[in-house]
Length: 89
Image (cartoon, rainbow, N blue to C red; front, side):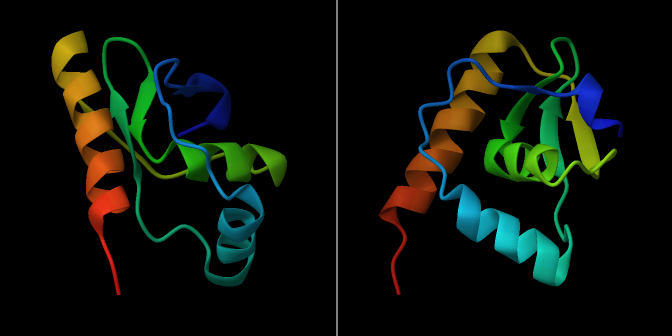
């Protein structure tokens, strides 16, 4: 998907470690698609990947569109961020 068609979700509260994400993209490429709300073009999972890819001047990223309401998209966005926060090693 052309990067210019995708938008960072305006309600994403995550502070991304862009240098780390950028390094990962440079070293390993993109191995998981960003998840995009079909009706808005907002990324609801993978905003950091999108930002890092833009910084690298990539013309495209792998993306998967899903047809969800705004409320469902926000729930997915928050749930994904929260799950990451609660993870551990």
